Image (tube, rainbow, N blue to C red):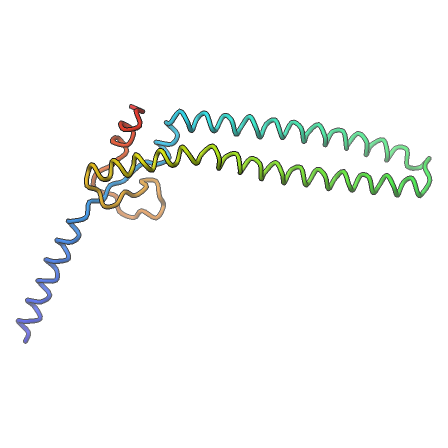
Length: 167
């Protein structure tokens, strides 16, 4: 019986080692490839330009509000209570508009980023799939992932860059 269990354990080790070797795993520097793609650089520039324009617009509005607030504060002693209350409500409404404008800017920037990056990510994934099939990789893991504990085996970064025409 003891010989049978030792034989079974040895057979299981051979089978498991054989299965592990049957799977080809490669790593890929996803961030490095994305940062080298001209499409990504162009998209980054477009997003930065968009955000900067919106921030400049918000800054103008904030400066106008600040000027109005300073004027209202200066004139407050000479105005009636009703006028001061109306001005206070106007300033509160202006502040709410600014907050809504900022939230809209964030949403618009995220939507623009998603729209611009979607075709870039699709192109990269199509090439990764092509390279994986051509080289017989079962798995390609992101080389920069913090979840990657052990990194050995082939690196598919060069093949993907070559396929994208980045080298």
